[in-house]
Image (cartoon, rainbow, N blue to C red; front, side, top):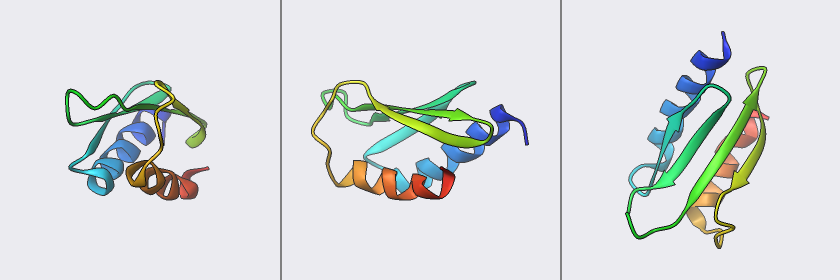
Length: 79
């Protein structure tokens, strides 16, 4: 599977797990996860390489909550 297909598949699965509070959009080398609420400043970048998650960056250094923990627990299988 190429990297773009991997990112699309992972993004789709993340949306199933994180909906309705967070949603993700795939890119070429990363997946961006943002909050559904306009006034909620949460944005995470999931950096992928060789069909694996290599790093998760918090764009706003926000306080991590249950949604973040849920995302990180889900991503353990992709590291």
